[in-house]
Image 1 (spheres, helix red, strand yellow):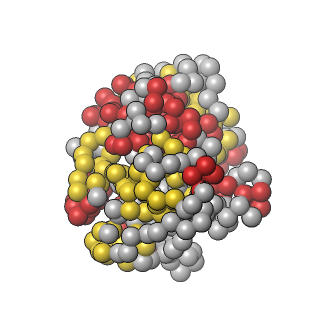
Image 2 (cartoon, rainbow, N blue to C red):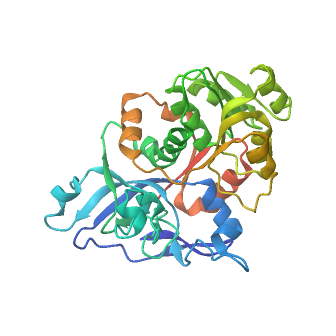
Image 3 (cartoon, one colour):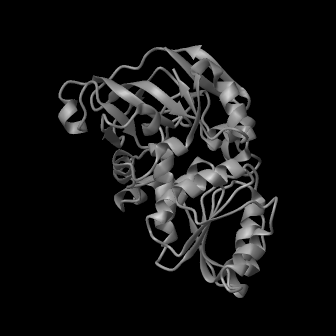
Length: 353
């Protein structure tokens, strides 16, 4: 089969690899489409989080088939595994981004997304990803059947939308809140959609691209601000009688958005940090503590969200078409990376093997 294999920063190769076979407890799927995530691009470009530095070990274990946003059709199950997996040959299926060990402290507490072993599709040796014609869901994976009524292109959004939903859950949005979501890429737009279901007083979407802000309006944003055309912090204060927003969710991956949020949020507000940054971020921690006494909440992956996301797509509660912009053949993966990196005239870019 053909697969995009990561060997190192800016060293991704289209290669021929053996097609995986299903052993006991395993599932093999034929990939229909796979999405390119901003973290894929940051890994490709050599961000320290993925490749390490003098202090930290890198996150990526090369060589590895890349890709963690995928949807596939089941083509192989080991004898007797169908009922256990809840899957049959021909089903559209997805596997959650992490394959937990189910033995560590976090897994035993139900926090499987924080698993110490932390095998992530597309980055770690045991879990080759979806930028390929076929892939295997190993033993211990969290697999979900996707209803036939959801198009594969829309189903490829399940993983990023699960991350969006988890971020909104972590935000603890209440009636009457003014919620700010910084960054209207696919993840930020998903946060807008799920935040709207919480019925806050206002949802403010922030982005440098007016097209993305228009998409945010379609998903439920009540206000949109472009930092190139207005002072975002002043605008947020003006609409909140000078107090600031109740909830600020950072989904840009840009250090400036962190400071922007600390200035825009009210005292005792909730700051939710989602992004994968390409570089370390520094800020004035006095604002967090002595000045505003903020709640700071991190977000990692999309635990316990996949069934609800699937339902939201099946029901039409979330308009998947708002997120999609391009579909490319697998061999054009570098062009896809460039499009996602540029962030202009593109949104969710899919690869089709």
